[in-house]
Length: 193
Ligand SMILES: N[C@@H](CCC(=O)N[C@@H](CS)C(=O)NCC(=O)O)C(=O)O
Image 1 (cartoon, protein in one colour):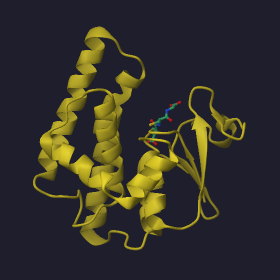
Image 2: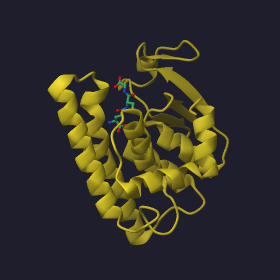
Image 3: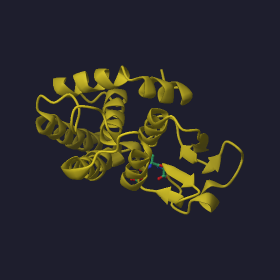
């Protein structure tokens, strides 16, 4: 299996899942500015979408879009969530992608002034809702982390980098995730401190 990633991007969630699963894989870094892989290949020729994450497997060929990639990787794991938990995980993947991840968009596209302030407020509102939805739970679904936790965890890292205050529950969630071996390994592999 190959993972196309950019350091600290949303593809980190998939990188964590691969470390969690423990099977062999190759991680290929992509420069998102030049759309070139670390091997000098044109990334758009590999994936016309031009963004990460993308995985390539013998079974799926190229697979993109966070929810699909993360669901696939969850299913390769030792204990994929089943029954209602599977739908709950999908619910979190949908929420994190469309409500939280998308809210960061203007900030990564260089929003300034009132646009930047508005985008930060929007992200804060979404993160506050995530914290409310979590309640007192340690993990998003059931009693162990899933790929949905990986994805929301990356959002908490982005918030920190952009100096967006996190609700206390998400500060604790971020710390809890930082304690996972798979998270440490994936972050180290991406050169993240
Ligand atoms: N809809 C895509 C969005 C992925 C996405 O936003 N990827 C960002 C990194 S977090 C990216 O590669 N941006 C570079 C670009 O769009 O050219 C998904 O959910 O996988």
